[in-house]
Length: 130
Image 1 (cartoon, rainbow, N blue to C red):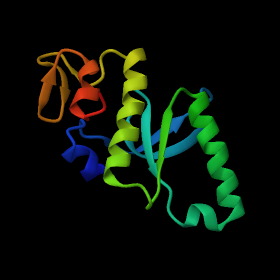
Image 2: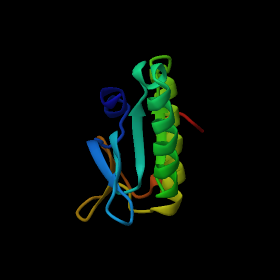
Image 3: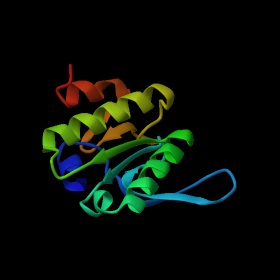
């Protein structure tokens, strides 16, 4: 997932991101994402559906992340590269409306991979979503 996103021009995501609630309880470790805008991407492998206990935990985890303001994009083996790019791109668009400084660098403005832009609003065009 990380390589697909970076090749598509997304900023390099962080990996294994710990997310805590307001009481300091570890809610989740997100596979990869951008904590500064609270967008996470998680791969849901076969073990996530093989155990009822794991399935229940995943539902609670997703609800907890959502309540903490995260957009948690869940990916499976059935998702194509295009589907991953589109879903993550739309999640970043949603968060960009609330967080205007995504990818901000005090020296060069907003950056997306090799791109340097003045606003996150160019993301849909970069992804061919418009």
